[in-house]
Amino acid sequence: MTSLNLIQLNFETGGYNLLARVIINGKHALLMIDTGAPKTVLDNDHFQKFVEQTELKRQPRKKLAPGATSIYSYTGKIDTLEIGSVIIRDYEISAVDLSAINRTFRGQGKPQIDGLLGCDLLHHCRATLKFKERVLEIDALEEPAEQAVNSVIE
Image (cartoon, rainbow, N blue to C red):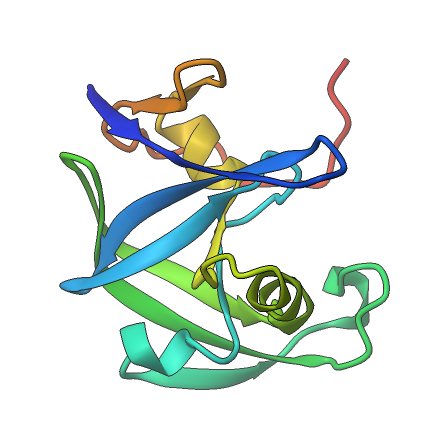
């Protein structure tokens, strides 16, 4: 298990975001912890900084995110994603447009993010987020035992 100290961005509205320093393919990256994001993604504008071999994929309409206008997305493979002492290998990642977030952050003098650390990795690394201490605790990646399907679990 590894404990990763997080960066907290405070806003005058009373809200805040938590950011994690990670290493992607040997390069430092800043990912926003996003428990509402189903997948870990990189920003379109930062994608090529971390992923050399990219592929433009056509996504079926049923797989598009709400509000998405393009049926195309960039995907690539990350050889190594280091979150503290946890190393995740051969992770397929997509690029999304995070320019609105980065524009807002830049306008407020806050650091820009390279992507979002989503529920896929948070869940499969058995993450515990300690808000008060600004710490993310994670274990080694545990691959899902079953094929992913659309479902609702109550």
